[in-house]
Length: 447
Image 1 (cartoon, one colour):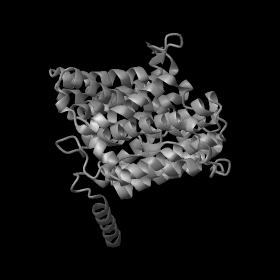
Image 2 (cartoon, helix red, strand yellow; image 1 turned 180 degrees about the horizontal axis):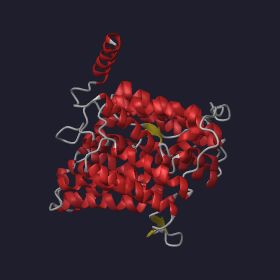
Image 3 (tube, rainbow, N blue to C red; image 1 turned 45 degrees about the horizontal axis):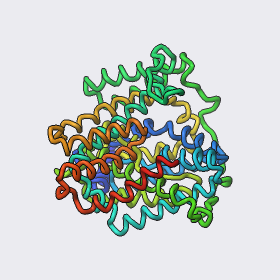
Image 4 (cartoon, one colour; image 1 turned 135 degrees about the vertical axis):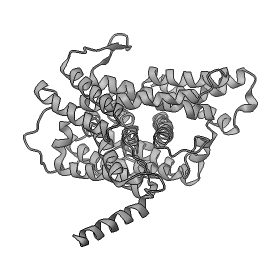
């Protein structure tokens, strides 16, 4: 008994030294629960990402294994190098670009698409090593930094409502419309949402985690949650996608616009996620900057460059990490716990695939709505500071992309300040950024 106590104390001591729990006012139990919550919030990507890549002809089983591998490696790197509660994995935008846009619509092989993604990751790595990504991030005006949390919150909340079936996209007008609140999926999501609200109001630890599990159980009799025939399965082979990256083919000058769209959207998405989730976890300074921000940037650039070699494009710090931060995650121990859960999915993939998107929707809805609180700190009475923030939020909703929203907010900040005769208030770095931002929007309109 005494030996067990000594062993436990030694383990906690190592965790304390490694992850600085005390200085960030956190505990092992809180961090582990936060990691599991973040894992559950991101688990739907184990289904979505392979499905998107399969549209372009990639082997779905191999893509599933590759997705798990990138989740594990990227999140472990974030845990031990970044010491941040961020889950690193493939983003939906990059998978849509490779599987649906390039391979499906443009008839450009997914191997070339992976090559473009790899070059984008290499560019990320080079800019991070040179410190330019941090320079750009610090050049972003304070009002935009404060408002981007609300912009990302809107994206996350809408994603949650759509996953729940509570909001639909009208096929004819492409406008959002209310869904059927009496459908089985909506009922499952609403049950989870109401439980999460009840538990959070009573400050019950792990409220979102319990809500996800409860909604999953409710979905069984309603036919939304499908129990697998077996809870254990061997992972699919990586062979069909391993190393199938056409680096030379991707250098065709005709693919330059795709490279830029890939790079710019991921750049602003990563910046926004890092600052928004860092703010949720209380890791930003008084200027809205994150100390040692180059560390998470370095992690996602390495993951983005290595991901294509196992068939997975655009690995980055995911906005679903906000679920972990909301659950109290503040250190890399949260990421470590999430990575262990993803590692288990190599053998227990059916368990992760069993959790329907409707069950995780309440987490996204609540987290997204809570992130709107960032608007309180924006001086909306100052026209030239407040209007770009509101434009950023609107563009995020219209484009259904918070990366595009952030880029639009920055571009409108520059334009509005110049028109108002306050061009001296614009940081020099933003003037330089205006050219690629304008080109980014031109390529979006074109493609």
